[in-house]
Length: 382
Image 1 (cartoon, one colour):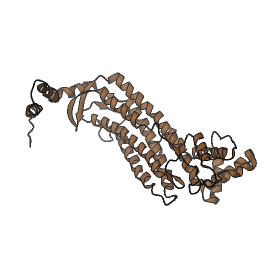
Image 2: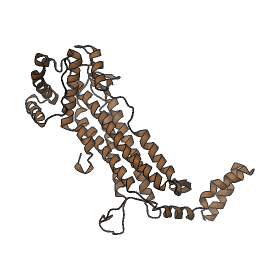
Image 3: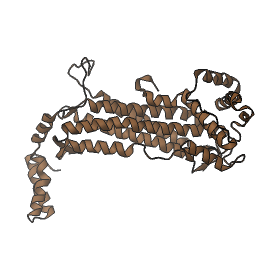
Image 4: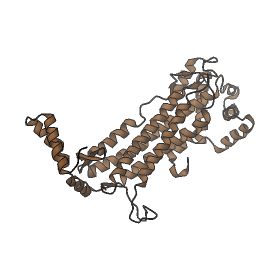
C-alpha cells in the first residue's frame, strides 16, 4: 500500500516480521500437541532471522520451505533431536493459511478498536448538535423535518452493525491432501484451540476454503461502503445551496488551486474513492475460490496483495472518518433557513393525516393536498 493511505496499526499486522512470528507460533503450537514439546514462542521476530530465511530461500525458491529449514536449526539448541519433528506431516498451506487467519483476526480486532474513535466523534456531535432541526431528504428532495441526532443515530447503528465482531476464524493443520494421514485430527483441534481458531468447517482438500476468506474481505468491503455512505451524506449536505455541514478547514488550506473561494469536501470524496478500491478487491477474493482439486497456488500471489492492501485501506478510512466527524462544521442557522424555505411544502403529510382523522378518505385527502402543493409550487403534471 502506498504511504499516502497508511494505517500503521494494521500495516504492522501484515508485515514480514509478524508473518514469520505467526508462522513460528503455528509450528510450535502444532509441535506442542503432536510431540508434547513446549518451546517458548519469541515475542518478536528479529531482522537477522528474516535475513537468514531469505538467504535460504535463494536456494529453496520456496519461502515456507526456507522458513522450516531455518526453524529446525533454531530449535536444535532448544529441544535437541525433537527439532526434527518440526512441520512433521504438514504442508505449506497448513502454516500459511492458519497464520493468514490469525492476521485477519488481528485486523478485525484492530478495526473494532479504531471504529470506537468514530463512535466517540458521533457521540460528541450528538451532545453538541443533536437537538438541531434539519430537513430530512428522500430522492434528493425535501421530505419532512428531522432532528440531526436521527442522522447521527443512523451512522452509529451502521458502524456497530457492520463492524466485524463475533466472527469465527478458521485454521487448518491437516497435511498434504487434507486427510490427517500422519497424525490425529485431535492434534489439529487442540493446537487451533490454543491459537484461538477453530478447525475449518468446509473441506477443500489441503487449504482453508477460499470462500471463507472471500467472506472476510466482503465484510471489509461492506464496512468500507458504509463509511463511504456516511462520507457521501456529508458531501451532499455540503453542496452550495444546502451548506448544512462542512468539513473542517485548516488555516492555510486551499480548496482549489484556481478558485480561492472553494472549500471542497476532499476528505469525504477521498473515502468514496477508496471504498471503490476495496470493493474491486472483492472480485479477486471471489475468483480465488476456484482452485484445482486439492489445491493450487493461483490464489497465493493475489492474496499477498489484496488482503494487506484492503486491510490497511480500511483502517485508514476509519481513522480519516473519525477525524472528519471530529472537525465537522455544523451550521444550525442554515438548517433552520433551509426548513423555512420549504416549510409549507413539507407539511403535506401532516395535513393529509389530519384530513383523514377528520373523516376524509385517504385517496381524497392525498389528492387534495397534492393539488394544493403542486399549485403552490407551480409544478405542471405531465
